[in-house]
Length: 503
Ligand code: GAP
Image (tube, rainbow, N blue to C red):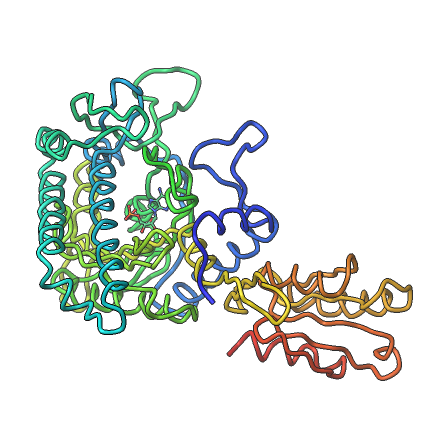
């Protein structure tokens, strides 16, 4: 039983009403997606779970909902107008535009594929005696490739960190990278491209009315720091959480909902006393990893990736990466952002953003540790970790093994056949259960087909009402994961479903 590749995941998401391309009947809008009837249920369940575990379960965290439009000075203060850039290059023949770091990373990926091909070949040649580790560490060809990969990666991160555009251009030339469309190396110089979308407010189109769609939700929290602290009467250390849309004009718009131009973030900024930030950074780093692992997908699918090259405002940072079909990629960022943002907002707004700490009888600008999770990436990780093709005795079934508490629908009510008597009874059970759980009612097609439909959308239980049910008040309960069926009294359905949801 294997997890599926991205193509199969995308088509499953469309076929079963999880995710559609935006504006599909107009041929879609690149890197913008809509959530369908099953997708929105899963997305809402993820939001609610995050909100409960981050805000309601923590006495020292409160929530806000700040607006998408904010004063344009905010983006100057945060550094986004000057530094929220991607380095781009155009191919003069195909007129296609690329992110330079992506072109180089794809080149590295090609080398990595050669390495893997060599290893697979050797494994076939040597058979069961093959010592993979020894081969990788002693074979000269593999060692050369590995050295080359390390050299390219290190040069890339140094050039990006120094914002050295001419060195990035030299890398493209030296590595003889070609445009995937035209096949030529006829590149323009490398330029910086700001990722923020801009728009105008009001009727007069003057420069002062320029606005940006927020590229992160965090700044709405920073600028509300004192409002929230004073009204909630929270003492440091405390956090402010928010779920909301963010917008980035991503150049590489691929990989489905992994990289979108309009997406949602679930962020929490935790305000601490200067000097305590690393202790809190480690606290949240571990807490967030535990949170993901509690979702009950395979624990080995999550790893930490500590940042070696830190942004100028951070004194520690890492990602939690998930093993997506395209490899381990960032799912959530945990950053110790120092007092950079609050200091910048003090400077640009000329308003004090300080906290009076009664414990030390002193005012200070707090330091901030943030946890920043992309809701759409979380959604994708849950789909990727839950969708399986499973061989049964008769065929292959596609089953979405969602953690039951996240499933769009917890139970489906199915009359065995379409007779008035069974329909009336099934609808009555459906109506009762609907008060407690998200339920589906389905009477179309054979019972086998209906079971498979529910498997494909991840419904943990199916309840079937048959002719005997009318006589003995018993129904058949089918378990999604084991496909086992047993008969229970109608009054125990609720208890059975709950037992699965809260284990
Ligand atoms: N406030 C910090 C911040 O925004 P980030 O690493 O740029 O940090 C945080 O973004 C998270 O937002 C990422 O880990 C990812 O889950 C999500 N994210 C970022 N860009 C995204 C995009 N274009 N599409 C979908 N999710 C994205």
